[in-house]
Image (cartoon, rainbow, N blue to C red; front, side, top):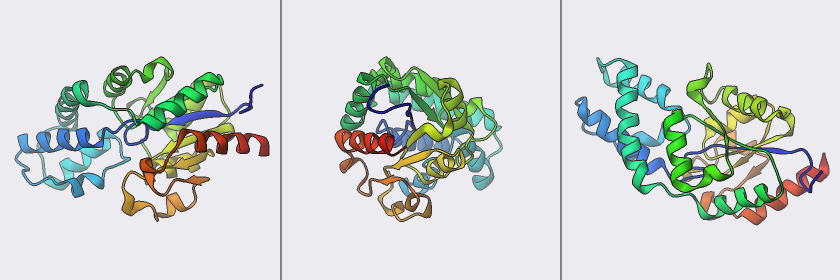
Length: 231
């Protein structure tokens, strides 16, 4: 057994592995504009960070009184997102290094995301992360999205890992809450700086308060080694 023992690592995708939130915002803005909502702002978008795409558009339908079915809104937003993601998806450099470090150790890894299966596949292929991250779970495949634990528990099941031996990396409070509900450890890297003091992040096993600007692959790896030794 390697340095990290029997630990498995589960990554959120958007805002954690890749800087995709700007694309999600723009896809949302374009979608809502098509349906007559012209004042959707970045601040509005931030309220949905960490929430599945399906649950996001369902909330739009209620909030903005949209007549279109949820499935239609979901399809339109995903179409806009895939157009954007195909040309401008970027993996965070230190996250890429971290994935490569773990791959070199043979650590089982998965992605558990609120995005659609098509969006996840496109992002992983575009960034080349699909070379190491082959186990993928979308919130569309489980009963409930984050903050429910379903996506993380399904990822653990597919990895053949005990939830208590899994470490989740998350950028959003609902995702951190989902990790705890699944009985997993959590490394929190807040995407929205103003949310760093959220109670979900306060309970994190490792809180990288400065977000991606502060995250380093080596520090995260060393923390995992210490965690493995303490078990």
